[in-house]
Amino acid sequence: MDVRLEKRLIPRRNTAIAAAIVFDGGRQKVNCIIRNMSENGAKLEVASVTRIPRVFDLVVPKVPAQPCFVIWRSMKELGVQFT
Image (cartoon, rainbow, N blue to C red):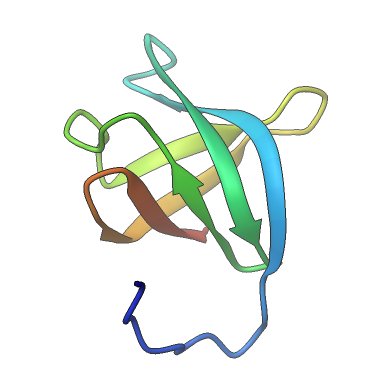
């Protein structure tokens, strides 16, 4: 059960979009699923958050890369704010 309090001003819509977390100047990539998103941020699902830095680019095919900043993380999820 997710017990986080809702603090967002803009609601997110549920999604299931395949994407990639790209960092280290494009040399590192971690596949992810965008589980929900708004114009300001998203929740990403990954196999493990241990290698993922605080700042990275979120890449979706045919869409410009979106710089992100990690707001929270759990074992297999990240909450990010678009920068």
